Length: 98
Image 1 (cartoon, rainbow, N blue to C red):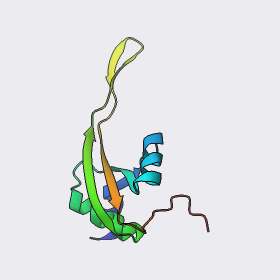
Image 2 (cartoon, rainbow, N blue to C red):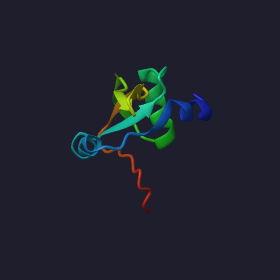
Image 3 (cartoon, rainbow, N blue to C red):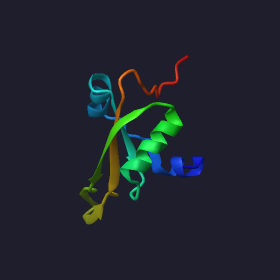
Image 4 (cartoon, rainbow, N blue to C red):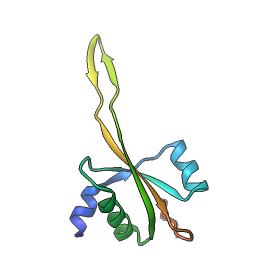
């Protein structure tokens, strides 16, 4: 898989309290991914970009909420999340501390 496709598949890490707890306890990391990405593509993208070994990938679609904006109905965007479980002794450091 080429670098351009890897950057398209992994949009951003999904930072949340639940994601931080999963990273500490279960060695899992959460990413926002492209809506057409498959589990195998996510696995190859994470392994290629972060130089780690991936154990398994779970993907889910998050539906956008319907909200009211000054009396009118609006809808937030849908997104796709991937929960990536890493092999033991592998870790992703987003802080980049040396």
